[in-house]
Length: 108
Image: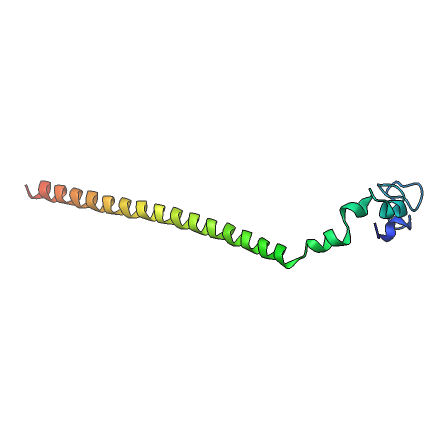
């Protein structure tokens, strides 16, 4: 609520008829009341968003997230590589068989 636009109506009028008025009421009342905006965003709760343990948990989460997808893509790659090699070997043997049959028919 410490935003100049709540005090000066010329900065951002957005349909307000009077200055010193915000979406929750009078800014002083909202800032100082026990059930106002400060109750949900106190200094302690705001600072707790930037603690090192939360950053550590953030990095641990994304480390395992990236590790999971790397392993997943690795297995998908191995899966397709296996079938590509299998297809290549099968194609090679079919080619050899057709070559053998064509040589047999030509030399007969």
